Image (cartoon, rainbow, N blue to C red):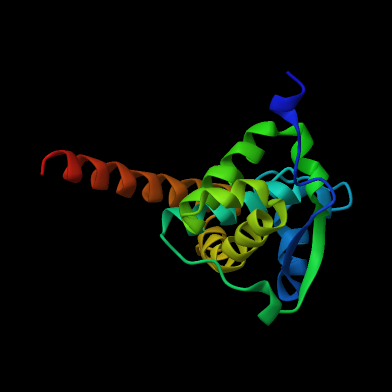
Length: 162
């Protein structure tokens, strides 16, 4: 049972471009210094925003970028995934799909590099979703994710009929 919850990302940094530091503080409850207007700060933790960016980039079919070409900072440590083991599995599966190489499963730093690269390309899309004019961020992101998923459902239905 302990093997099932092993966090191979422990000790590996989750990184984002430095230009997004303020945005993480703006949209995450952990960055508000105790202020929590849920309509304005829809993400309980910074890892939630980062993980959504990874998922959005994956859904949009974007390629991860090399974070070495950007100035980044340590957002959090990979030990955060110990409390959410399903994220470990999701990141592993995403890495397999991107790398198309089974060896990636044994290379946690490579998997985190892929995830960080996806977050870097996904974050501008997520921030665009959050900043839809005339809506509080929580409702804007909710609508945008619904549209993204509805588009996926339509794609699946279209493929099933062919």
